[in-house]
Every structure is written in structure tokens, then in C-alpha cells.
Image 1 (cartoon, rainbow, N blue to C red):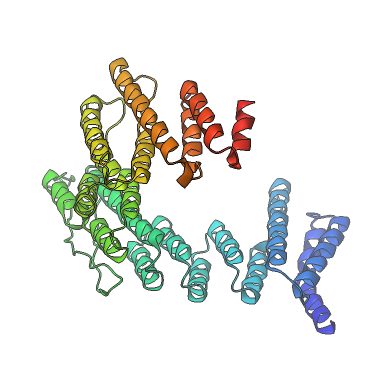
Image 2: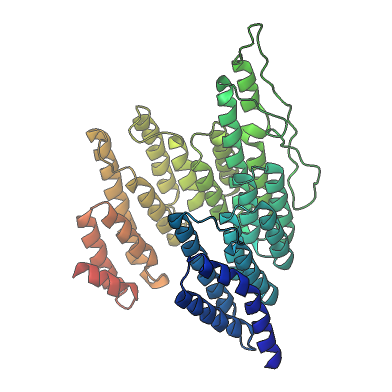
Length: 458
């Protein structure tokens, strides 16, 4: 106990000169300084006690952050030039002590990292990431966080890719890490493509921008294709020339044509024995990059792989159905034609799933995926004929889903139906919502979600 008190006294004594300066400049009153000292003393005793918890450090750091924010506001309002050290170092010290004592608490590490990011302390962030990943190498979310920071904040793709590839050595069985790796590469391709288009605004793509090669290749890393550097050359008048051929070459290069995301997908599908749902998750991620020229190439690659591996799987079928609409806006003139192709594929898929050898669970999964997919197209401003086609397709899918749900009620808990009820309600399809509620009450009266559902009805 004496040792604990000595540590408390040591840390509090270090803060006395700062508090005296704050009081002398009337940033804080005498009473406020006393209150601050008392509060810090309470925190110090808690974190130095034998039964201290990570939450004590977290609350201590939060208190210091709020106090520093108040100090800054008062200094600015009063126009005081306060040359005393700010609270940044003190907050870092609290969090450093906490992570040193509870190095296994990821939440505390993330609070430490987030504060460093807000302070834009690049050196400190690098130190935190290094320590955190050394102590928690099997936490895939930390590798993802580090890679995203490297790309989005310090704009170093080589570092971001290094984090991802090192993460895969420790977490190769993390499906989310593989998906996020592909997403990271798509984000980078989007950035490089944007830079290529910006050549007309006197932008140049440097060698660092196009650094898409990697030397390390083993069982858990991807061999990345090398690229050439393209430069913009001035003409005789000293003006920049926008070389459309250069832009085409950039976009057609192996890396920017989607080769890396495709390689990541292939490796992941091999590692996870052709998991079709994982393939669908990859498809969903790539669909969010509709403005990237290579997105269609990657989507086609995913669909081809899934069809070759499991043609009648629900995840394969829904990806094949959705593919024609990739990159199209709902109100664009090309949408109706692409929708027609998608619906024909859907009809073919439903027919393929109707055979006796196909499981009822697979038919239900396809129907649910198709209903959730088609609901997004019921928007204002859509051509009335197209709207009617979508509505008719939706009602047909819904009727089939209800029939199959009744047949399979003994083998599932109804969670899929409850999910669809929420989706239907968002679109204002009250007739279908009421039918779904009646079916849910009939088949799963004991499901905990029924209480919430009945609350909606009331």
C-alpha cells in the first residue's frame, strides 16, 4: 500500500507546476484546481491499486481529454499565450501506462491509437501500431486497421500492402482479412485511376504512385505484377499534353485491370475450399466500386469461378443474376435492358433449383436473396412499365418463398422471414408485410422476435 501511495504522490507532484501556472494565469480558479487535483488523485489511486481495471485507465484518459479541451477553449477565449506543456503528453502517458499494464486489452490500445490519430502524431501512431501488432498478431481487425491507416492517412500503399500480407501470415484463416485485402487493392486502383484521369489537370503519376510490385511470395502472400512508370511530357510551349494513349495504357496494365484483387480472390477460394458464400462476399465488395473501370473484369472473374465450382448454389446464382446491372444507375437508359437480362437469369436459376435433387433450404436461400436484391429497385422516378415488371417479379418470388417456408418450418427458426419483414416494411409494402406477419405468427409463435413483431403490429 505504501508503494502505491508513493507512486500516486510521484505522478501528482509532477503536475503541480502546470496547475500553478494555470491558476496564476486565471485559466482555472483556485477551486477548480483543487477539484482537478482531487479527481486526478482518485484516478491515480484506482489505477495503482491491486484490483485496477483497463476501464480505470480509459476513464482517466477520457477525463484528461475533456480537461484539455476545456483548457484550450479558455485559452483561446481569453487570448492567453500559454507556453506550458499541453495535456497531450499527459494523456499519452496515461494511455501508455494502461497498455503497458493491460497489454491484452485491445479496446485500450484502440483508444490510445485513436487519440494519436486525432493529434496527428505520425511517429506515435507508428510506435503504437508496432507494439499493438507485436502483442496481438492473430487479431485480423488490427492488421486491417493498420493497412487502412497506411493507405488513407499516410498514403503509403507499399506499407498498407505489407500490413495485409504480414497479417495473412498470422491470420490466413480469417475470411474477413482476405476480403478487406481485396477491398484495399480496389481502393488503391480507384485512386490511381483518378490520378490518371487528372493528368489533364497537370497531375503526374510518380513511380511511388504506381508501386505495385512485391518481392515476397510464399504460401500466404500474393505475387503482384510489376508496372512501368508513365510520365507526362511537356510540349514545345511548355504546356502539359494529355496523352489519352498513356491513360489507356495505365488502365490496361495488369495491376489496374484488376489482376491483384482477382489473385487474392483465387487464393482465398482455394484456401477455403471454394466457399460460395465467401465468393458472394467478394462480389458484394467489388460491386461497391462501380466507378472503377476494372470492376466488371473482377466481377466476371468471380462469377466464372463460382459457376465452374458450384453452378446451382444460391450464392452463385444471385451473383450471376446481379452481374448485368453492375455499374448502372437505376434511372439510367441502359437499366431496363440490363434488368431484363438479370430477370431471365433469375428465372433460369429458379428453374434449376426446382428439381427434386435440390434442397429446400437452397431454394429458400435463393428466394430470400432475390427478394432483398429486387426490393432496392422500387424507387421513385422509375418508368411505370419497369416498376410493374419489378413488382410482379417480387410478388411471384414472395409467393414461392412463403410456400417453401411453410414446407421447411420445422428446420429453421424463421429468422430469414423476420429479416424480410423489416425489408418489406422499409419499402412500404404493407400487404406483403401483413401476410408475412400472419405466417410468422402461425409458424414460429415462440420466436423471441415475435414480441418485437407484435409490438409493430400494435
